[in-house]
Image 1 (cartoon, rainbow over the protein chains, first blue to last red):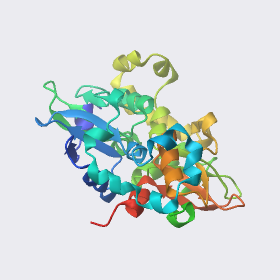
Image 2: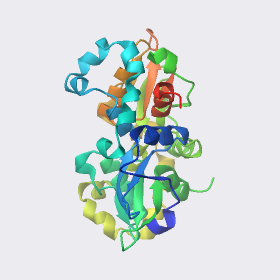
Image 3: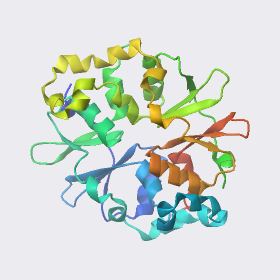
Image 4: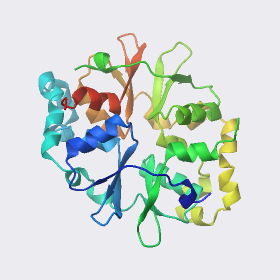
Length: 149
Length: 149
């Protein structure tokens, strides 16, 4: 089974979308990640859901995780407020660009290999012009591949 | 907000569960990961969903990802059959043990930091005796933390 057959419609967001809106989309639909598209609709990258957690952790805690222990709880509870001042572009991991976008003729096993290697339960699928055909989640991959019980 | 307040009931599986059954559980409930418990109910570890993809990729492809391109498609389509011969224990990543299990008094920010560092949208929460209180997904974390719109 090829990527084009596995690809299903999936919500997309643009890089200039408010980060808070993106987080709400993720949470309300329990999405495994976000597909970020350019103005022309071509997918730029995929942001696995756990990376959203990255941006609620202040830089000084990322440099010294032991500090997470002593951060004021009330501060932590309101930390997500700061997302309102950010855009999706600010959340993107610089080195991940395009690595989670696959071609229509890639096989199921190539997608599985990519998911494992890049630790992402989500990839975007494009046609030969780079236009978005849809996305494949690990759930669709398993659903298509698991033997019928 | 502390881990004990965020922890919600979550399906658990045992290490000796058939891996195919575990994959079906993951897929049918669209879970972000699996909480693996010992015979006494204490959580051993958490397996993020994308790691299930890891075990449908043959070893020789993991060593040379370029080979994924040339693997016979029919073979790939039936690859998941092999899960039926495995148990969850066979799927566990050796170095991950217990790293995704948090104490009841850990803060939301500690959980977010752990999720980002370990690239997991799921952690298990235990009491002082190591007994499972529940699990926290990224969705619950966001749901609790996002400002009410």
